[in-house]
Image 1 (cartoon, rainbow, N blue to C red):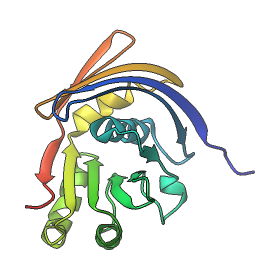
Image 2 (cartoon, one colour; image 1 turned 90 degrees about the horizontal axis):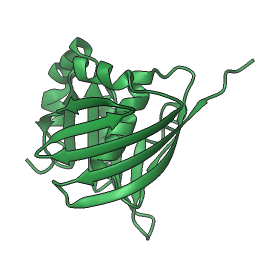
Image 3 (cartoon, rainbow, N blue to C red; image 1 turned 120 degrees about the vertical axis):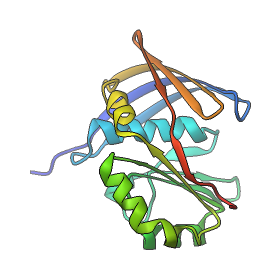
Length: 182
């Protein structure tokens, strides 16, 4: 018998001072049976970092033709492709051919460091690609906030993220490894 996805609901109050973007989002996230709380919450962080009216969660792990999140414009053009984790360089190259901007939010400590060392030179050729890394201690602290029903408050300023949930406060600072257009 196949295992089913676990559904998580999040109410996200967002104040992104860097982009002057403010909003309230009612989000439904399906956690694949093979997905950890850490990965689920990093996906949620990726949403907060790039939130817009048109950004949505995709099938991700369940479908190799879709990223974890994407943003389509009103014409159906792929504006932003967001991957969480340590995606294959070939997959990112293909994504850069399809989307106006591609973002990777890597995590995993030493594994993420090794992934970056192995792929940095090839990924540097992708002008549409931004790569961020969330340090292991931060992604693990983020995972501890995972609940089936979450009320989150998020403020983003100067690249720092403050996240509050049920009295727990967390400060995150994803490290920019590569910026699109550099």
